[in-house]
Length: 279
Image (tube, rainbow, N blue to C red):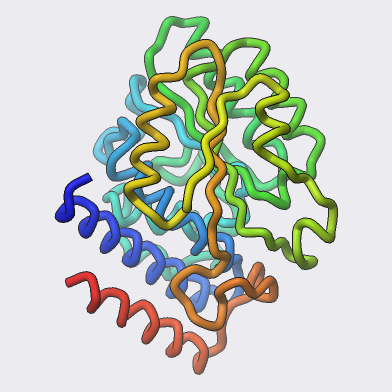
């Protein structure tokens, strides 16, 4: 990846982080920590990797994306707005009465959302169905899903993993957000699902492990996934929960709460400094 393209993606990802914090602050509730941790990957997906068209969200040939960890909807909404699916001003209506941007994605009301999610484990299962459907009908679109590390404690995730390998869904890419924290504390202490890499390989997947915040590694991983035939790919991203906001980083208490005004200002200062450094 050349320097200019990398800088552009970094700026876009920082814009996404700013929108995440602004929307959660405006709502007075939400899930900032895990939204911030996936900002780089979801930015890469929508601006570089996936075939999507904001002017034609239901385009039949589009690639599909499923946010399996649906509570991090602020990240999805932010990148959809940044990509032009709807106006960024609408992000301030997050979780408000009559807003279509509720706490979990709604495929019936939000342009660019391919699956309603929220109940953990269901999203990856839906993504498997989409990938199998594409195979059955001879379509060449690809399917991407982001699964949380805490979510991987759900048995349904591993049923889906078995399904995907059995049907040789090489058009499916699962991104596992390994930030190590869930709402109740460290994932390894709540219900340890590791080692993810060995488990996915045992289930018949191709596995790649990367730094979630390095665009060169992100690009290389998705490029490698496109070369894999006969099996699905799992990209395990080692991320920082709350990435970009000093007091949120690696702090499980920011899994599901909004900052008050004083801390909102600190977050904006943190992200503003990053924006300045990327000019």
